Length: 138
Image 1 (cartoon, one colour):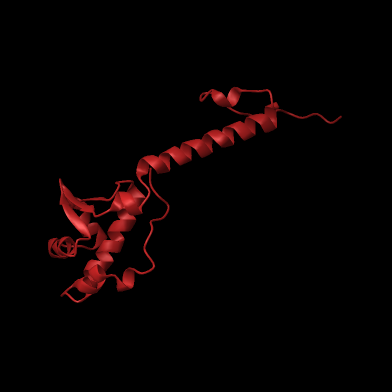
Image 2 (spheres, rainbow, N blue to C red; image 1 turned 30 degrees about the vertical axis):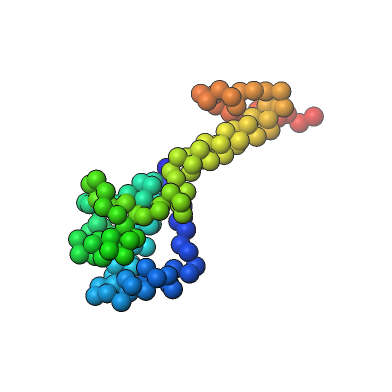
């Protein structure tokens, strides 16, 4: 249930939170950790949650995490931090998975109809294997 991408506002370089953060000691590092955190959360389908044990893997420290909280980019959450406003700016994992399931089902339907004909409904059976029918020369 991971995202292949995350959204980053094209005006992020001039946002007041960014300007405040960059002006702080270790601000550039905190900005990098913020963007790495976006990528981690999107890639792992956490809906913006950054577990405490992941902080070092995204090149962060407790001090940097605190800077992100002070900048109102992260919030304290159980077991780590939550990227603020994730659900308003990023696609939730459940939506991503729903889209993937719909695409898989659509692919099964197209394959079934292509190989078995428009009347076949085996694509509705999730256990059915859709195998191309052998065509004979005529």
